[in-house]
Amino acid sequence: MLFLIIKRILLGLITLFIVSLITFVGTEILPGDACTTYLERQAFGEQLEACYRRLGLNVPAYERYMSWAVNAIQGDFGYSLSGEMPIKEVLGPRIKNSLVLASAAIFIGIPIALILGIVTALWRDKLPDVAISTVTIFAMTIPEFISATLLILIIAIWLEWLPGIVIVPTDVSFLELLPNIILPVIAIAMIMTAHMARMVRSSVIQVMASEYVQMAILKGVPYWKMVFKHVLPNALLPAINVVALTIAWLLGGVVVTEVVFNYPGLGRLVIESISNRDLPTVQALAIILASIYVSINLLADLMTLMLNPRLKTLQIRK
Amino acid sequence: MKLDNIYQEEKKSNFAKVSEIIITMASRPSGFIGLSILIFHVILAFISPYIAPYDFKAINPTLMLQAPSAEYWFGTDDLGRDVFTRTILGGRTALTITFFGSLIALLWGGLLGIFCGLVGGKTDDIVMRIVDAFLSIPWILAMLLIVSLLGTSTEVLIPALGFFYGKGIVRVARAATHDVIAKDFIVSARARGHSNFSIIWNEIIPNVRDAILVEGAMRWSWMLLGFSSLSFLGFGVSPPTPDWGLMISNARGLMSFAYWSVIAPIVGLSSLIIGINLTADAFAKALGIDRSTKAPV
Image (cartoon, rainbow over all chains, first blue to last red; front, side, top):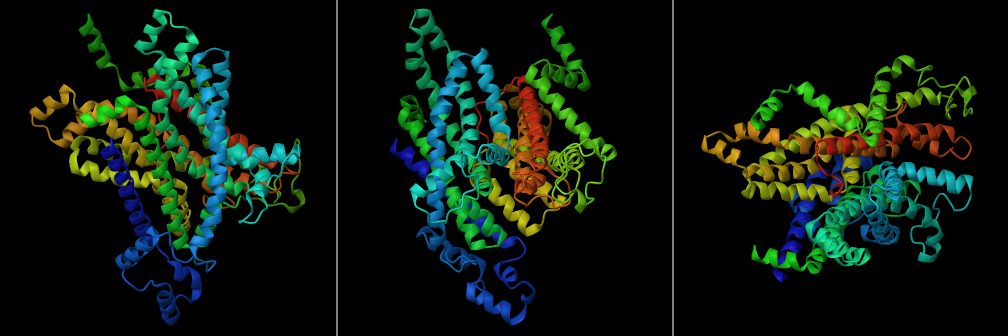
């Protein structure tokens, strides 16, 4: 068991190492670098040399990678090119804001997704299922920027209930942020909930069709007791991993949603730093977002391991 | 009797097989709706340049932000351009780019996945670690970086989208290959001394084709979503090309008093994405593949 956990963590670390290599090599081989962008037309001769020296771009690439990696492990990502500010300080409040947004969406989304998924599975092909499934298909296929735009149009502009665009400084306090995040949270939670509800539904349906559930029905176990004792525990376990993958995948959608609502989070920083060709910040963002992805998956793996006694013995025998 | 049936199935032409699958897809309501929407959009993409009532880039300052009327069905935008014309033309670029992008994704993802599943061992381990690493970088960050450094031309967008949406197919193709590889006919092909290439071409591809095609169809709708998001963020096609994502982002700032110029492209893009999604779902069901337990990686 302990061996397994250590192995998963090691695999995650290897993935992160490769990610750091990819982002470093990727930003290296693509044409244009910080200095040519920064100096534009004056990018030649003495000035270019001076800029390379100032940013430490004159040493070989592998040496730069080594020093960058050593610093990054300690949480020091160097200086952002546009703001001339340590990236650590730029990232701090942004991470907090995005975390507030994402966790609010997850905490609202997961219970709703569970209820919707279970209801649609138990009343499969009946009216509740058909109605809810149709809505979830719409909610999960329509791009985030469209649902966000429609939310702003209907709730902020036509009904004038909530502010449509977030106008707060980056380092705003949590309470001031709260009324502003309602619409972005709805936009993100909608698509997340729809994806998860569909997975829970098919997982529950699969378990309902299994032989031991059929046996329980034949033995005359009361319906709801069977659902809660036999079906749900077995159906929700495999769903954990898939839900984690979905959450991680939706990080990309969070970027778009933050831009639509002008929300001061990591997503808008992605767009800003790419528009400014601020490559050190882009590298830091790639590593941070990849670590979030890896840790969500790791967490899901560990949760499945802890909760499923069968998996434990199975893996050890292997 | 049983042998006879198998023999007959072998003799079915490709055309008969394809039409049978399409009929199965259209026999479900959701599949029928999806197919109709998709066919409508494809036909529209072909004929829209000939039926467009106005020039999509003709700017007319006297006609700025007109409400829908008999002359301008969906009104006009902030530059006085006809929204109806731009809306029916708005899907062409997205459809073309994502269609060829999905083909590339299918090809490289499918072949690499089959190869990894077949050889296994060290090579497989290394390739899968790299694929995992690519999967953990958010697609949007990678795409934005490539596009902002290399430009937004079609020659950049198609391979870039093809590459980033193909890495998930590697996993699916590899898993499907693993399911096939232990079967007897592979073992006997090996015993007959067939090369890896021959085994892949004659034995594995026919058996994993369905799974990979379904995955490719699904990728198409996600790629469309990704491409429109790029356009929306200003990193996709460049103006004045009519494109739904771009139109939505342009019209968004003015939607408090000119909502028509944002509604039309929203309907166009949403209906196309829903159409492709429903079609892909029906396609999976017609081939007997359950995709609903898979995460959208």
